[in-house]
Image 1 (tube, rainbow, N blue to C red):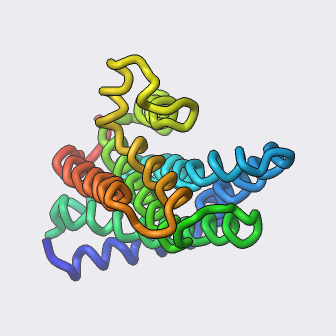
Image 2 (tube, rainbow, N blue to C red):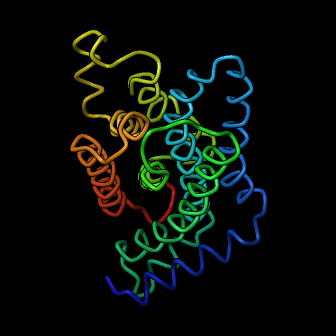
Length: 245
């Protein structure tokens, strides 16, 4: 891997995204609009909004980054762009790192906007620092980017990318502790939830919600989410294909 090649890929992807305002709007506005909708759904029960809103502040960026990243990468391969790039002195690691950096920049903006709206506009009540909320939201968005890059290698069309949502994202949402505490689930489901990174994203948000200072559990949760993103990026580089068969 060479830094110059990685940065060149990053600039190219960001330049392409700048010409696609609908995708940028999806990335930046949809999580915010969903949080605002949730605020009005729980208008009569602010405690419920605080509990669920903090968790969804991490889940929404993950889902949107997963969709946009996987579809954008798939388009590169089906259009032949990826094959042309890999015929040049550009390794798979350079390409994946470049994509990760480009979408990581968008993840920073997306997580920052969503966190700012939740904290200062929707008055989300939590005990910890807003910077810790932002950190978990950002790690979740980067994890969504990594999952999107990885999944795109196994999809032959955009329709197949959408089909991966029930297989990759929905089980994590159901088992992450959003709807029921994980310790109250059937043992086999609790074991499955223990290996799903979204479970630790939700727990990290809950730690910020309940504690004024970073706890050991928060550090563990943030480390697991970040480590999972790094692991999936490495898997994405290993499974990256030049083109769709």
